[in-house]
Length: 373
Image (cartoon, rainbow, N blue to C red; front, side):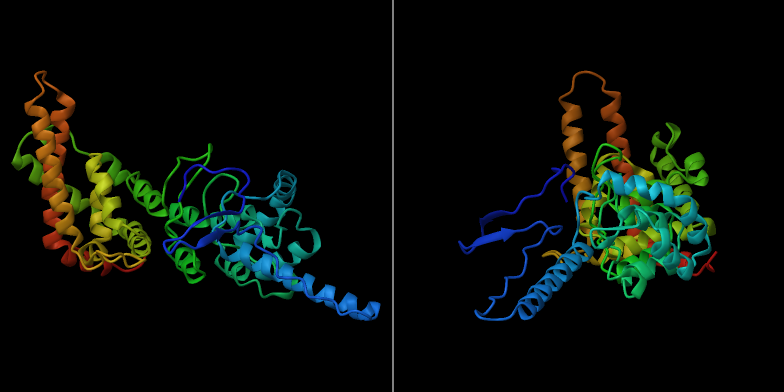
């Protein structure tokens, strides 16, 4: 997913592997169906009927493309978004109650800015995510109610702020909403983009990073200098970190991450980025929540290495990275404290990965045995 995009997406062509020309088209403006030939010597009513049928097919094709493809960026005009804010004070209490009937009534009577371009606007659907309005969200995703006139929500349409519905649901740790979005083909591999967000974040990243903001972790989980001083201190730190993550209060966070990880491509690579950057807490959260998917190496797309053990791959990467860092340190005549800390964090990450590789299945079963909060 590109983190930078142009305001207008034009149809382009490139050469395929077999030498053929492959055309890529803008999903917001898909190619129209071919116009039907109007037979000569037909009356006006028949010609009007043919044109009307063609227009209906064209509108249906556009509506389907806009509701089912990944749309980047948001194409909603500013005036539609402005109109939405005039409707928002009436929409919020409806979504708080998650009233389908009231939502349809508002949309039909005075729902300015709630629907445009054959879809429920991204702003409207984002508001449903923010208020965890499951029934209204399902109604919008289905698009079958007569009052919707064929309009429906696209779970893969970026909003004006540069993120997707799944990012919002991940931020709220709403497992039920995330499951609903996946039921309607939401992609876990879409990334944030634009000036108003931290770019290149997957929904998985949002859940992992926000989990690390939990007070238990923020106050106790991040390593101090003492935790880095010796192997014994390293062991104690890892035990403390795993203990914190296994508390009942952390279940909803780990459940959310586990669900997102199941649908995220290249999971082992995402884990490695955390380890390489020295983000031990984030790595531990992802390791423990997604240990099953990391262990089997499965990804949503079923890559070539889908049967590889992600723990073995990660341990090998850590060894190679450690050798690189230590080689760099041996050639560095100055006492580089930053490099020294990197080496210590990398060594701790190796111990962490090994610990969860050995005990992860038992720990995961223990965490999932907690009752739902």
